[in-house]
Image 1 (tube, rainbow, N blue to C red):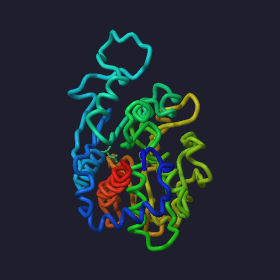
Image 2: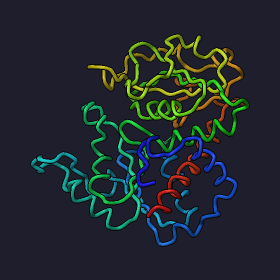
Image 3: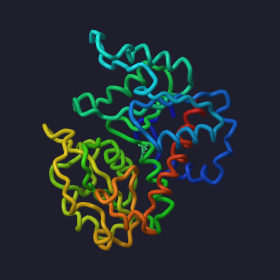
Image 4: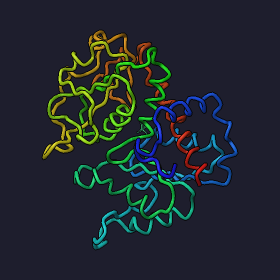
Length: 317
Ligand code: CP
């Protein structure tokens, strides 16, 4: 594997999930593989899980790790070419990328959508510059349109908990007070579409995701209908994608929150969310605290998804 930016960087979703589960049985088996190799993790945005799990994954492989928070303790970076740099950003990404790359073997980047331009966000303006100018393998730790380490962890988790070959997985929009990117749902859809699970997306009208991500997935605008018989409920908020509403919050309709009444419509489904989650907006206390909530093992599997990806990249250095 050279880069890990989307499901397209994986030869087979089924195989990588199987390999990840095998790795999980002995996560220190390859503790010499990364000796004298350095992972640099660059954050343009905050993180708890991605930061810790990716760092732990690299340490499991014996790698050295450096972490840079671009907006805390480093020079602010200008990302636009052609601007007169007379503002508060003293360094340009075009110098910073090759400099940072000179200190490491693998680069991992978190750079969210900023909603200023759909075109910039959907062309992955930041992370694509790392791919172009670093000369090093690049891992997405959540970019503008995708969060593949999360999706791989989600699939590993479903594989561990499913009790039938083709479970029904429902991804439901749920309310949130602020505008969130579409990266997690886009990515989840992209990865789920690469499985043969029974997959349904449900959201209020106006929240359709980009067609290139939805593909042939079934979209059901009635949440109650979608939840019927679900084996897994994957809750997530996202802001609007379409037209002039891009990046806007169109609704905080609390009837879309995942409550015990909603879960009662399912086949005793497991509840999933990538975290962080706003309780009693996205999901009620009782659902997230129930014995069917698997948000903690899901987050724990972030270490495994990062480790299998790093292993494949380091093996290819
Ligand atoms: N799920 C996830 O990516 O969590 P963080 O934003 O805390 O990294």
